[in-house]
Length: 420
Image (tube, rainbow, N blue to C red):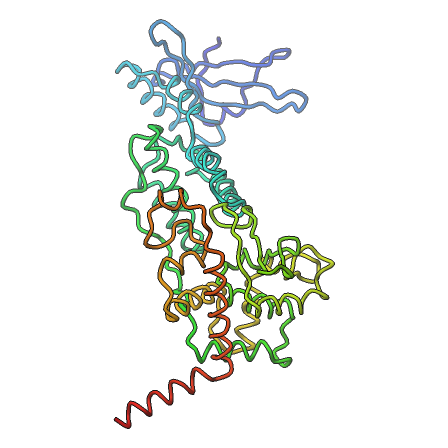
């Protein structure tokens, strides 16, 4: 192998001889570290030459090559310094080249997150798993995602999510939550020695969501939905009413399909398939007469599509929730959000005197409040009749609010109290 004095300019002109694909030029400069060289290789067909700095050493009698960087990215002076540092490690008995090979084969943080997602995919809904996979693909393209999982530090994760929070605070919080869940899962399986997310606070400040609607706001919203001046489509109007009367989640409700409904049964029901539910568990929802009336009124408009609340192209309304939710807020003048309807439902049913356990069952929670998970596992009774009664009572209560009867009752109660 030839020895030449490498210079800042000459390194860009050295190339293999004709009919040779590669050549290594050892640095003959007096101060150059031993084994320091420039490796060149011709790129077939293009005539270009790739050039990189290397240091060659022996470890336990075996020759090793340690790449220091391309000439375009690393200066000659920096490459010599990197070679010296590598040789110091060799003198301490280390093998830098072997360590690099091992790290390249190690499970990256993005790979670890993917293993976590795959492991629990059967226990989650397709929607949740899909959201996780999108976050994982984005993570895999970042420097953090490419770090070997055991080498990831708390500062690495904090810097990544804080940078993300500068433009997307909510997304930063979701990414941190996913990485934290994956790391805790990995610690329990001895894939990580410790959780590197411990002590990291949520980096993004999320605007507080309106908790629930008061009775007067509920009445105003409903009356607006019934008004032709609001300019809202019948599908949006019906979906909002259904969410309020059933307490179901936005995604579940907007993906309601005609094939999952039994509107003419003795007890009308809606069966939510597991792939449409958080947690991946099917749920049979009894339908009150008011809900049945809303759905039957909508049937002539959308029965040609699989989804009950279909948009213009037949896709479910959940495809563009922000747009139609904003239209409702603007038309009705109520600080409305789909999740606020679910919270309004939960509080309203509780105020009617139903227990926390029943409220949990109506909300479709995995474990009802006041019960143990093991008890739920043995109980096969689905409380369909009791849930149907509660939903009917809630629908009648909403009708009284809309009619102003609840307001009149409160006024009379206040007058009677004042008379005393």
